[in-house]
Image (cartoon, rainbow, N blue to C red):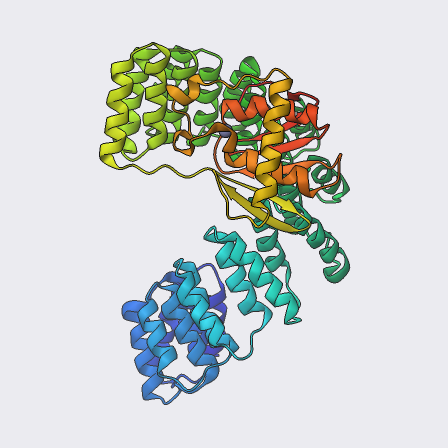
Length: 540
Ligand code: ZN
Ligand code: ZN
């Protein structure tokens, strides 16, 4: 009876009660057994009470000679790991002869939750028999800590080991594909899920597919998955609206939002991030204002940092800098570096030197190492012909030894993702790629393309360190795409930074000269280059 009630509370919303009942049990003179401990320990794990309660229980386990019970043993590891006492979890694990897949996985999960992926991997590699749960713990750990290539690599190994992945493995793998822009692999996984898991009615999986297709640049396929869903969850509406917004299909995103209301689905804060970013990418100022106020008024959702960020960016781009600043003053929370940074970008576009100086000061306070902000400020000075100030900023940057994030672009050809850095010559086809670059430059020249050299000389852009414009990473990736795919094939690239002005105009022309559709994802959004123009209408 004691065990039953302890077990009940351990699964309830009040796990602390299980610990209280355990105490009463001891006081009543009833001796706990191997069925009692897993559940009291689980309760401690849920409330993070390794010390002192968990340790006292551990003492009881040893006194009663239950340390060698497999279930109790794993529960101890789990309890320490979940309470953040990884060293103790490790001690229990190391001192014991009981090492099975379950106890390994308990410890691996502990390391993964702390982001210690290398420790987790060492344990994982030691394991003799791995089950789907342990594979899944590792793969989702890699995906959550941004190590997407490793997540996909491990998934490949899992398949070769003939372990059947579960739904949560697939969700992690799809998110890795989405981040890397690995569309071929994503498609393959779609088919695989269809065949092997027969669980396509699973809403989280379908939502992951929508997200993957949208982020890999195939918005049509995302729509198909979405339209085919019988029970659309809130998350799936959100994924679709955000996806459309990213692709600059502002009207479609807003239509979907109103359809969502018609079907009686209540939007949440994430929905509004999608709606506002649709307005932002579409440059729809009036609608943006309308949705922003409707969010609080009609839906009782108080705007968060991201919502303000979208609005301030939208207003700033439209040149309404004073309105943007006024909105910033109404924020309940402190604006972060990204919000100030977008305002700084607007100051550059609209040549507001004084405001730019003051905004930059705020960015530097929050993010002293933000090289991009120094570059923007320098560009503001350059635009106003204030060359002494430009030189001063350059010196500051050099003195501080600030390193920029290097620009890199990846492209997937025949299911293999190739990554290029600026001026990169390590690719096996490097010679052919540079031949193609020359040819591209020749044809661009013939088509009357004039590179904007002012950006090289004075206007330090995001990639100011990248040097020669024609060797920017996206140009390399496009050149590789042109030589390694059949004529007419769509080229899809993913860039980690914002596309620079020069590459943007060059890519527009390249799409026309080579008669290719080029879909580029940069840090903020998608660009669909087709027949000499871009879907973003040069607003990005
Ligand atoms: Zn560029
Ligand atoms: Zn564009």
